Length: 310
Image 1 (tube, helix red, strand yellow):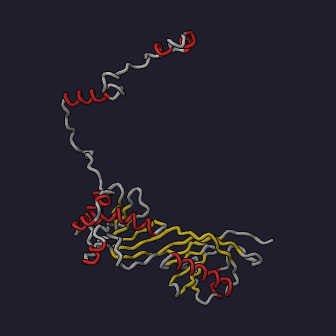
Image 2 (cartoon, helix red, strand yellow):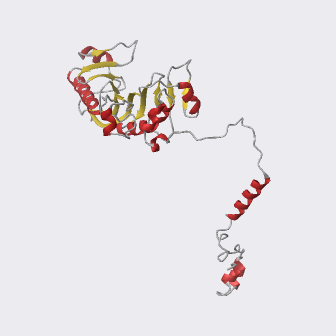
Image 3 (cartoon, helix red, strand yellow):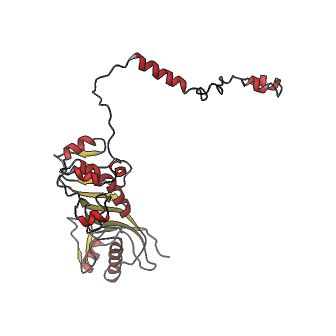
C-alpha cells in the first residue's frame, strides 16, 4: 500500500510586456479610433504566469517527503543547488526558457515562461527529469493559474506626487523607501506598480482578459497625471470616469451657514415623502389605525375595514 502525499507545485511567473496604445501611428488610429491604451494590436506581448499544479507520488515509487535535495542536485544535469544562498534546487531549461525551483516540501515553482502552455511544458519537463535522473516519480494534476504579472509602458512621464495626492485612499508613494508608486483601486483584479518613467508592473490577475480590462479602466488616470494628459481624449468616457475621484469637501474647510429658508424647505421635502399618496389629493389616505386582537375577534366582517382606517 503506497503512501499518498499531496504535492503542490507552483509554476511560473510570467510577464506581459506590451506597448501602450498611446502610440500615435496613423494605422492604429484608423483601425481602432476608440481603443484605450493597452489594447494596441500592433504591440508585442510577453506574458509571465504563475501556474499551480498538484502532484502525488506514483504508486510503487517509494517517494517520501521531505525530498533529498542534495541527491537531486547531484544527479540532475542542469541543476544548481546552494543551500546557504537559497533553499531550493534550480532546474534551468532553454526551451521554454525558464527556471524551476524544487523545494524539500515537494513544491515546484517555475519562473520566466512566456505563457500558460510554456508553463505547463516546463513543469512536465521538470517532472520527467526528476523521474529519469533523480528517480523521483510524481503524478501532476490540477493545473491552474494563480498569478499573472504584466509589464507595460504608458510612453509618458508620470507625476507620482500629484497622483498620490489625488488618489490618497488607494495609492501609496514613499520616495524614501521605494522609487515607485503602488496603486490598487477598488474592484480591480490587478495592482499597478508604476515609476516616474511611465513603466509599470501589473501583478495580481489570473487571466489575461482580466488584466487588460482592469488596465483599460486605470490607464486614463495615469495619463491624466502625466506629461501627456491629452491622450485621455482617445479613451472612451465610460473608461475615463471609472476611477475618477469625486469632488468632496475637505475636513478642514470652513463651515458655511445655511439660510432658514433652505432649512425649512428641506423639512417640507422630508415630510412630503412620508406619505406615499401625498402628491395626489384624490388618493390621499390617512395613517392606518392600530387595531387590537380583541377588537378583531368581536368585530363583524363588514366592520374590519372601518376599524383598520379605510
